Amino acid sequence: MFTDLLIMITAAISIACFNKYQLFERLSLKPYRVVQHQEWWRIITHGFVHADWIHLLVNMFTFWSFGGYIENTFGYLGFGKWAFLILYFGGMIAASISDIIRYRNAEWYTSIGASGAVSAVLFAAIFLNPWDKILLFAVIPIPGILFGVLYLVYCQYMARQGGDNINHNAHFYGAVFGFIFPILLEPRLFQMFLNHF
Figure (cartoon, rainbow, N blue to C red):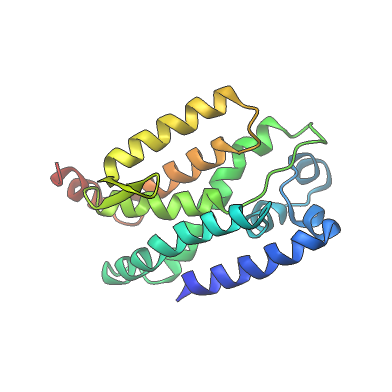
């Protein structure tokens, strides 16, 4: 399964970057370098780099929790497993666009982590099964659709507050991409989503 493979690759690269600052610098998303030096690979490679063990474990646990479900569901719906990779990396790209535009002249700005891609997978799961339970704060079971709304509101609120070194915009745009992506694959799924209500 692609989920397991991506987790292994991400863990290996992240752990390597924990001890090799030069590698961390080479792979992280630096919009200034993307735009001014055409280092476009950073839009993807930053998703394989994490700040520390907690950052890595939270992202990979969330991805593992929903990735297999999405892979299997996409297969069942006839999208093929490659659609899963498009979802994952599309979420990563969608999460990067606002940073590239906003920070294209900021040499100091750096962003890392698979949060945009993971949010895309999570929100595809919410779209496909909105009443399935998700654990809020890892203990309180709530419907996925309610979690999704709270998550998006929180991301936007925190993005406006700033100052916590978390790229909340990446979470937001990755989530929106993940919610829309199944509709792009099969527009009739939107009616199926509405039928849940």
